[in-house]
Image 1 (cartoon, rainbow, N blue to C red):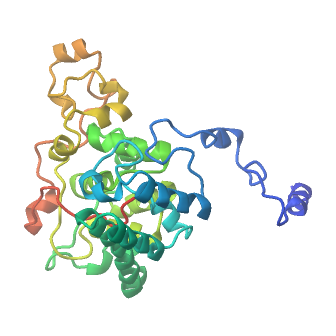
Image 2: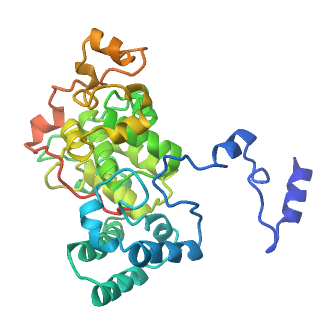
Image 3: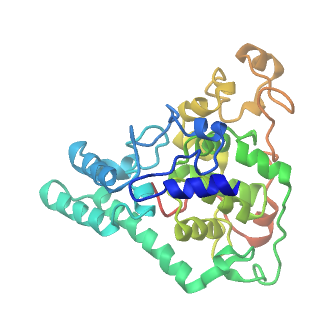
Length: 336
């Protein structure tokens, strides 16, 4: 009501921070954000602001001495220290990329200079690259046709799917591909996802599922703690193949086995398959009914865990028409 609005406005001042209730959120909304999921990969007791940002830089680089091993741990997916986790504070301007780069240089002078120290600064440069990329192309990074224009691959206009049920299954982590599902559930529960995960779920939505890539960019914008317009939309546009060059498809099963060999990560976020043997944890659809019975999980429509949303043995249509390769190497940019 107007009366309530006037009262709320009257309470706002430099010394009063409106509560979530004041801002119109329901108690259910408030309860959802009142605690941090214990599986979160974010630093313990994290909060916004410069004070915590500087503390995280100090903790990661100096106190825990993790900078020297960054290159070796950066593709992890569990825990707060496999990557820097500087991204949320960088995105909000709580810490300067120049400050982090200076700390890396100082570390090189005082402790060690190696591939890891180089790589963290390299990641910062990728953030800058996407800012210049957005400056060059403007709002074309939001177009379905991206920066390559309406004609795709020499005259064959790419046809995109827009099935709301399939897109929702991707968002909810119910595609039947454990690595994709685990990452999407982590994003929904914590607002964060590893760089390795981001590249895989982007490739899966835009290439394997062939859905309009902008649904992915929009969903990431909605949920990511480290959302940055340039890195987010530049990466999605690129991952969908809409910036030109080679289309890079990530083989989800291969990626699963390469980066989560024992299934620790997928079991963390997909408890339905917690008892599935290592051999099948990344391809649970290959189990027989008898094996499912032994594991206490049923795979299939309307059962405990869904069947694959796309045929695991099928070659995506776009891969058959543009001559691109798939293997799962590539660059995400804006790594956390």
